[in-house]
Image (cartoon, rainbow, N blue to C red; front, side, top):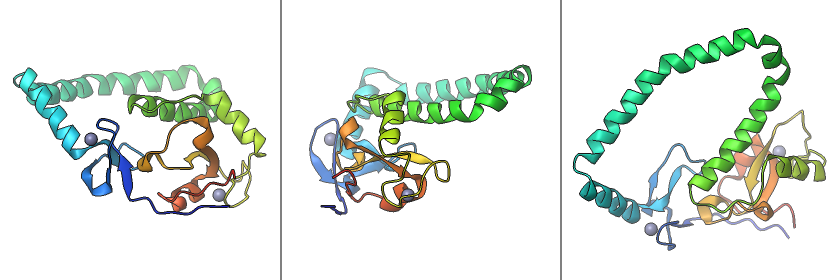
Length: 186
Ligand SMILES: [Zn+2]
Ligand SMILES: [Zn+2]
């Protein structure tokens, strides 16, 4: 049976409590759009850091803006040089490497967010193969669509990043599913 629920609770990875979505800060770099740590814990954490290092906030801001300024040109130049000297590879492998990098970034972010992860890029490829490279929601196949990693129970709702909580959905279905819990595997 397919379950469809709208999730309004989220588990804080710091205090472990299930809290209302409104109790979490906005984080644009997360897929869920909110922080993995509740507002209360994140305020406490910031305070703790500030207490330990005077001028911490100011220093951190300066460090990042310096880093960005220093590396912007360098990174841009390097990328341009690479494209020019590796034209053939870029053309031939660009797409595949890009897909791999997207998945790898996703895994790395999940790990950084404190989520236990038991799969890698090749497990993801195997999972897609198992389902015939088909989106489990709309039934369209790759390469017509591009399959994305969908969390059956969204991370947002305290779902895990373990392989058993993962299903392939196309980008369109993945975003229309939003924070609902729909399991296409069962
Ligand atoms: Zn918390
Ligand atoms: Zn789909």
